[in-house]
Length: 127
Image 1 (cartoon, rainbow, N blue to C red):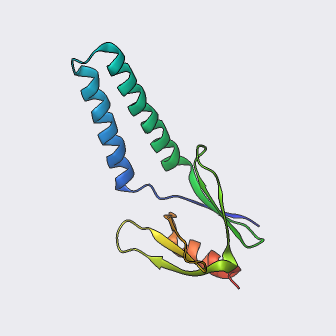
Image 2: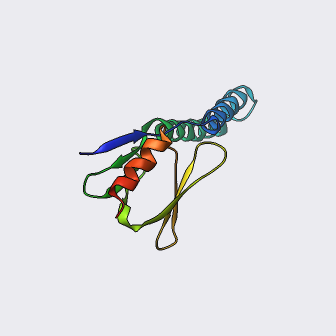
């Protein structure tokens, strides 16, 4: 049975979106040449779409075969981690972020909504 955990959207995501929206409004009203304004607004709006996609669609799936899938939106590849290769999970003090440390030394930051259930589910499949 697979267990899916949605990502917690932190204040940093909202702050990033607010800054991008403020930049879009400011550049819209600035007296720049028309092609430059269009290119700049297009780039900023593309960044906003990517940020919203990552914030809304990020989820973590713990599969029954001992694999942790990290989905970071439609524009990013899915990351597959073997739960048996997890050395430890560190909890950061602020922001509700967990750092998954693998046996090979790589680290992956995750921020599930229900941290305690996520850790319990990982420990269930950890051998």
